[in-house]
Length: 606
Image (cartoon, rainbow, N blue to C red; front, side, top):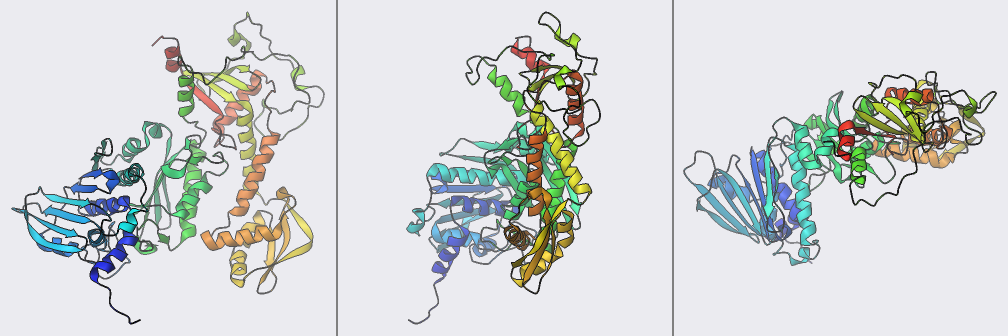
């Protein structure tokens, strides 16, 4: 069969199959063009989920008739010249418009500011109609009708109109977060109108428009720099989470991306603070020299490749963890909101509670833990009482007819978590603050304190290791051995001692004692794979954190343990001083705060 040159229409349709996957892909390309043209107002209209109609109007720089004619030809662009090493715009390939025109009915109307008239050009299924004069406001209007009419097979792979409309909405949200100075309006016969007014330099206000007002109250600001990479944005407190990763937004030099390295870094930063199956909310913006990142690795430009992926991942993980360490003792405001909803008339999601019981000198559960909260926290060391059970200590008593507050020693309620007033159901501490009350889960709270103390001890000194009677020899490709040997000092600090054993093998001589019996070959191969993928070796540290979290869970004060008021107050003070104390090791909240105004609303006082 002889080789022949494909027609221009077929070439464009092949390109369209890579660039324009669905209506949302077309919307993304058109919105990017509008932003690159300097638009401050972008309106998107759809019908039939974008399959019947997709119209993008902007007030950008517009195009002349000559530019219009070039814009619908492949590889014609105003955004780059001879190199791909300095890309500072969203678009750069010059493929979007000709690709759309080859599979749909494309019409473009444009007028430059100051021009006496505009121009219109059409491309229907690859057939070009030359530019002609047209009445249009300054800017550009791109209208796409009957998407994929020229390639019917592609239509069969599209989802329902509702799903396609939802995908376009998600694209607009990502663009809106990235460009808060631009006003976005999304409307159409297949949806309710969605509008994001411009917020100028107030990025958090735009994020609140997209992610909801709750995000503003539960977000921690990020601002970090490492070498030539900067990171800004906001990360939600761990207890403010969702059931999927759809609320994680990442941008590289203003470009929305869905990069697996960044998503993995977010997941790693929240390790041991988010419940399994839950995802944090985060908006991250990376600024990096364009020469150090390759955006030309995916037709949709949603993936990027960093020259130093380890640096980028380390920056994200470090910045988020540092922010959580500074403010991570905060609990999400949604906990109090949920409690308020539960008390509304007609809510049936809870059963009638048992009577509240103050602390007392009644008998405690068998073998109570003898943790001393009356002195500064000493790393969560668990010890048995030397002479008598915990409940036998002298402590105030309270009868039902006595005012509860008189049983507690005087403690300043101006502490952020207030002063302990009662223990109910032998697990929940009720504390009074200056403007409300706090309810603390004593087991979850102390579990976090013990875990943080264990983790700090792991960082401050070399972890204990167990020497293998006979070193385990593991055969690996030579390049994996080379990667592992680069991280030997890091491994040694974590209790894993390895050395080279010939060109294609690693000898394991010691393993971390915390891990107990270890599958050394599996561990080493997993670390080698991780280093090859991410250029980091954090997997071992993550395993050790998991073991520490398990130890903390079993070594913390248990539910059902009755505490003295001094112990409760000491626990509250330690929570205030400990990073991440707003959630336990499993990601559940450790306390819920109710403002006095919320309580008064429950009783109709406001």
